[in-house]
Length: 451
Ligand code: PA5
Image (cartoon, helix red, strand yellow):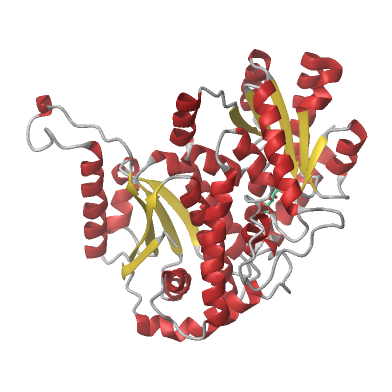
């Protein structure tokens, strides 16, 4: 595992962690048993790599005749086809059906730009729609569609979610108006293999489709076609992304299959982080603030909020996930963290190698002259950690060597696994979202009542 976890200022000692070690072991075994619903993502990266490693189980719920490796190759071919004919890919989806793809594409924007420059390839802009019902927002999407060669990809596992369905029907009309009968060959659908309104519509219209595996839920689906197709279209090396996740999964899975004690291996540090989060929440720190010092991780913060919020927040339990971008938010929420009501802990996501740096000119004078931006950023990281620790705020650091597709794959898997383990330790099911259904029912009643 490339990721380092620094728990030295978390306030949670190894003695405290030992109290939850048995619960964590049980959680780990449950996740890796292959018997729990919606745990297909656990071994998915290994299955996608065709790995022969001794992982406890492989994804087993592929529908008959469905070959994961073939699906992956088909996705790559399709991504190339989309790149060949479009400058714009509009992805319609909400929640887990778009957040993973967006956070990866945003985080790796610099890698995409560099690849475009060195290879001369043109990677389509990937934008997302159907995640809000703002007319202004969608007018803007339509404007872009009219200006550029466009493909449309609609993603819904259930195939019946109101917001993406409404947006898709509008954007599909745009496609029909612009491309006539050719529109069909520019529309892609990612949904359940056989059921749901979108599956019916896609089959009837003859759209190219990809399947969301049965046993993988929305927020754990970024390494299925849900995330991989848009990510591949954007120009990111999806093999490297999967490889990163696979390496972490297998290291962790193997450690997990032997684990009956807490050791100091890096894979154990994932478990230690999961345990520390739960221990902190039990001590009254029921808000976790994810913090990053690089704006390209902004949407990764959104993805984390979805992953943890929808997985842990139920039965009156859970850690409320928040996210802040520093230095920006030091000049707003920084005040609250330092002196406000203490009910939170911080999880900083730190990237070590930030690529090419920029030197600050002499004209600014001492002490900044001649220093680089990232040197100042480092001072901010250290300064914030020191100031907040002095104020009694527990600070955890998750350190990534660099931001590339491989490490992003590791980071995604790291947090998915942490979330699964922590939720099971807390006694909640990480894979359902009954609370989301409540708003859907109320909204549906409002829609039905519209004239
Ligand atoms: O994590 C989840 O399961 C949810 O956030 C879903 O992804 C979201 O509700 C969208 O569902 P669907 O893909 O069925 O439209």
